[in-house]
Image 1 (cartoon, rainbow, N blue to C red):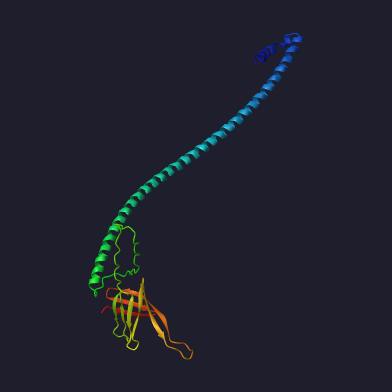
Image 2: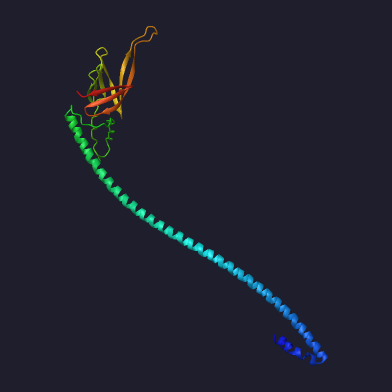
Length: 268
């Protein structure tokens, strides 16, 4: 740059200089001008590169802004997750309290069941002592007896002694409750599982066995079929089963459904 300034300063005095010196100065000015053109081109390239760098910086700033927005959104979601975890902890605490309450209720129900079992035993004793007063429930009688212990089996002092099951409330005598009925119906259910049924003097007494299955009463008896000379069939016996549905029952009344016929009975 100093050379260029010196040459510019020498331009006014070129006419005063000898010919050779003037030509040398002109050649140097051409060289300087060429160098200046190269420098100008380099400056232009540098300016373009600076613009590219500036564009890249703007792009990076935009990317950083987008990244910052995403980080803020992720932070918000993390806060929501943390709040949800807090609610889960609260729910777990509530469930723990509910479990403790259920455990306490289970203990109370166990005590109530023990009291009811004692009361059931008392009612069973009263029912056995007063035959005509039926205080039993509708639960069927369990006829299965516990298996006897082996002769050499050690005696367990903590073993629970099996109690005699309460008598089925169906046991006893039942009479036709409808006074306008054309036929009588007297049913006697015995505790040993047998029964006696009287429906008419002509038919005689029907004897057989009975059992109760939830809300059904099954009567079974043996009927005799007379010999048939036409088919050469001899006299034979067959078992007849009649299943009656128990539609309603109280301590004093019993309603049975035989096919589509209702039979209403009462205690004598």
